[in-house]
Length: 284
Ligand code: SF4
Picture (cartoon, rainbow, N blue to C red):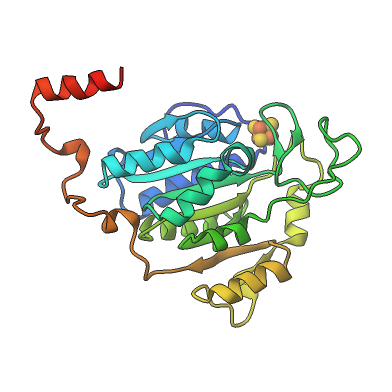
């Protein structure tokens, strides 16, 4: 099982996204998937290219819409493991509504955000994750907006698996992706993935100095949502590891009345051709 293809990523040397690509490939192999059992769906941005760099089914969607596509893929074929991926601009600006509603809906997919706190593909503008005072071409005197607290947002929106990682922690990130794939429901992993070209503040060294691993916090329990929220607030969101997991809540597809065991994509079409044409004509 090898999830590497022969496409050379055109990310800048040192970009954090390389590690995320490697972690997805390793996690998929470690949980025993074959390439035809995995679909990687991405949005727009430097990180959105990732669907083209993994040997699996892939779909490079439009800006902010990776999640609706990924959920559609899963609902059409629940036999597939579905990973949606993109950047903080994709998921927390134009795609915010999809992110929130995917979390509360709880379809069994994994969403990985490569969070570099800047728009890299368009050459460096402030993003919804940039810190106050962050200077870019779009905020030359420093950002005056507070960054979106995405981990707290995920907890309040109802995500059943919430984790955060740092792209250099390849072993931990791979393990989190494995757990996310195996979790029954919507899994969200935010990965601090430095943009070495345009973000000169939130660098690898900055994260090494400022991140705390949850496994180093005595008594931390990822099944305790209140503790998860308190810890995020205490550490200003700068923690890594499994923040919260609810193993009790059933995924959306198990609750849909009449949702069959045979995936729709493999089911026999019971409509006559005339009826099918009639239905299609309604939408023309
Ligand atoms: Fe990565 Fe930034 Fe280069 Fe984009 S511009 S590939 S995010 S380092």
